[in-house]
Length: 114
Length: 190
Image (cartoon, rainbow over all chains, first blue to last red; front, top):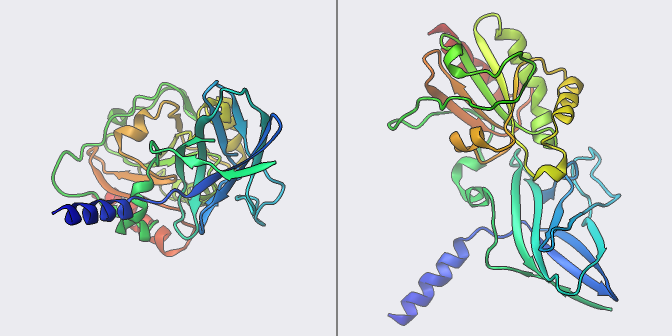
């Protein structure tokens, strides 16, 4: 019975859509550098720069000089840097994701802690 | 210096991401018949701010015409890539009774500039769009039609009934363009 429940939970977890990107953070002194790393096949829209909306109301925008040849998508992980307040450790990452081959864009908002 | 991956919190909000796994998404572009049953009456347009028209358009005043709604935003490459097809459909069928209407729905909050009417106007001019466009800044029309992707399309018949829906980029003279073209001609002939 208990094993069945575990299997059911695992199956449900497997059905959840994977996040199309993840946020990497480096801290150097007071300055934090954020990198938005797309999952394989998840193209991040460069015409609508991704944003990190911090809990204190600050909005950071991600960017990179390296774009695809049509300038529509980031060719490498876009970054954002800021000197954050010590008590700010969470926010929302917002990105427009246009999966390769799907011919559409989706707006994805991901709550993050760092 | 220390380095670590952030924790994606449990409250991840994947707008529309759940649909990425459904079968329909594997075949974007082509219009599909509206599902049978239920109320297929096209929800009225209530957006107050419009471009390329001198008053806020309402579907009620377009009865007797076929209406193609295009949900788009100027920051979406798939959307702007589809505009030439829509301009062509407008050119072919406006005089015969097609009303093409853009529903400009921002992806991001206002800091992105997508809500700014002058930015939308610039995008319309850049792409030679002369058909009416509503600013759907509060997503009221997006939500009323249950839209999840940019770009999306809803084809409404002369009686105001949703007949076909679809999503995804298409191009002049590709297979999906021809299907949309055929559907429009069918509804114009009714």
